[in-house]
Every structure is written in C-alpha cells, then in structure tokens.
Amino acid sequence: MLTIDGLREFGADVDSGLARCMKNEAFYLKLVGKAVDEAAFGKLEDAIAAGDLDAAFEAAHSLKGVAGNLSLTPIYEPVAKITEYLRSRTDMDYTELMDRIRSQRERLAKLCV
Image 1 (cartoon, rainbow, N blue to C red):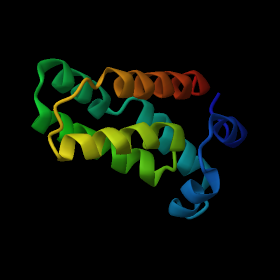
Image 2 (image 1 turned 180 degrees about the vertical axis):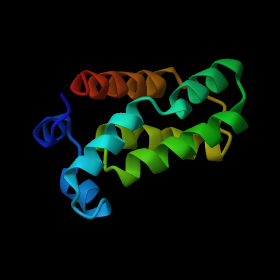
Image 3 (image 1 turned 90 degrees about the vertical axis):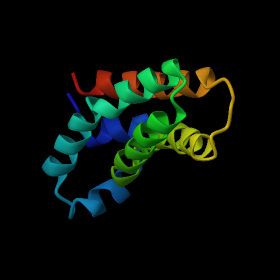
C-alpha cells in the first residue's frame, strides 16, 4: 500500500510534493499511484528502441514534468538527464539511463501494491 513513509524511504521529496497538492495527502498519493502507469514510460521506451529521438524527447519531457511535480526524485533525476540529452539530439546509447528509469519505476510500483 502506498504511504507517505514509503515514499520517503523511496527517496521522494514528499514535503515538496505535498505542498504542490495543497498538503492534501490523499490527493498526492492518488496522483503518485497514477504516475506509475503514466503512458509516457512506454512511449519513451518505444521511441528509444526505434531511434526516434523527437518522440523520445516528447515522452521524456512529459515524464520529467510528472516526476518533478510529484517530487519523485529517484525517477526525476534520470528522466531529467535523458530529457536534456534528447533535447540536444545526442546520439548515444541510452540503455543505462533507461535501465535506471525502469528500475525506479518498478520500485515505485511495488510501493503501490
């Protein structure tokens, strides 16, 4: 079950996330729960696999906003990094960053069960 304490252990800046949600804990937890299923995760993976840097940038930028607004730091940090590489259309191997994003999403998903 998703809890504030669990999110703190995950590494989220819960106080900032709650502040953006007017300190409404139930609302914040609901949004975090929905963030795990954000379609942009799949879009980012598919676009990276296809080598479509433009579509990958759009998906990463969307995820950056979601993770940033909810202060999900362990997801936000690698997503912010990949967003900037994609913004500049850097031709590189994105595997390590994608693995970090996937791993942190999986950790968060386990908290939501």
